[in-house]
Image (cartoon, rainbow, N blue to C red; front, side, top):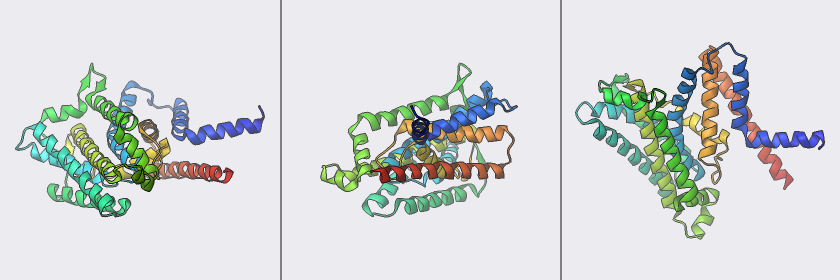
Amino acid sequence: MSSKSIGSNILKFVSKQKALVAVIAVLVLMIFSKTNFFSAYNLLEIVNSASIYLIVAAGTTLVIIAAGCDLSVGGMIGLSGVVSIMLMRTLPMPVAILCSLAIGAVVGFINGFLVVHQKTEPFVITFGMGMVLKGISLQLTNAKPISCSNPNFVNLGNAKIFGTVTYLALLTIVVLAVVFIILRYTQLGRNIYAVGGDYDVALYAGINARRTKWTAFIISGFTAALAGVMLSSRLNAGSALYGDPFPLLIHVGAVIGGTSLTGGKGGIPQTLLGIISLTVLLNAMTMMQISGYVQKLIQGIVIVLILWFDNFQIKRQREAV
């Protein structure tokens, strides 16, 4: 095999497994760093940090595959945590949490209605909805974090089984498994891929494209609310600001893993790998005591390079055809 052929195969592997290559590169780098990156405590911290992102990403992946986006998840994360804590002051904890999850589903319903039936641009309308939700949270809390005095609520995001695996991690596995099954083995999942691949063709094939895309938004709102409740439980506080970093990182993580923003391509394994790669990178930079400003710079450079490389490969494939 010629060196040119080997180089071509390596390039193809890197283009298809961008997130995996990024994770391996970071892990190799951390081997030579004088940090406790590979300690059991830090590895569990990575898992817990990734868990919140993955719960949100599970639902958002459905929307992305259906050729949409949901930038309201950040506002929903903040609102659901705030609402659950405030309702627990007068209602039993399960009822308060169910109310927060119901709000998430309703917000997803509204997003779906505006995008599917009113034919508004999903990027703009969900961004605006996120601002509305954040504004409500700021008003409810007077722009200040609120704490929770219910120890059972705190245990939801922090309690561990056998002293190692948290309930949060187990919940994440369940959510990912459910969405994976939906995409891989149900008619809804097949319809989501079809709608994202070509909306008009899906209509001609007899698929209820509106209902399919609408359902994806409802699930996305629900998982964002669930993540918000678990995040507030883990931090023992609620704040309108907790969801700020989520919308961008969730969508970038999905794309890095191989889920296409144009729809019809991707899945839970791809999103899982993409989110983990970003989480590992963030944790590694923190362990190396890199300042927050420089971290933002490095994150931006990595994201730009990966997405540029992805578009470059797509362009080359089109030219080859």
